[in-house]
Image (cartoon, rainbow, N blue to C red; front, side, top):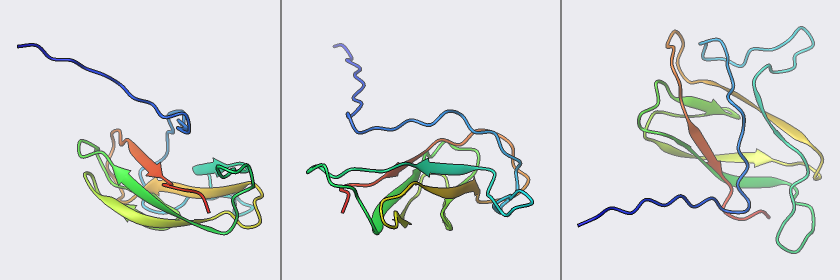
Length: 120
């Protein structure tokens, strides 16, 4: 008996660099009200090449071995949990969505995935 490992990365996968933030369960902002920790989305294109606009349905999933839950754009998911979240891409211009821990005072690492099944 043997074991085979494989790793599949789809061509539409976007990976973020590690993000370090203070362990507070609110979006920290600068003096001009800009969130410090964000997911930045430039223009996203649909399969036909047109620019995706308006509200997009996504799924936020936090790994079950995460030290804490994650909040993206106001929706929180605990470790091992998936939640539906809407991301408004407006008229197709660049957008940013706040990201922060879902609970305060916990240190560690949490990996999460945000999946948009199909752009509208």
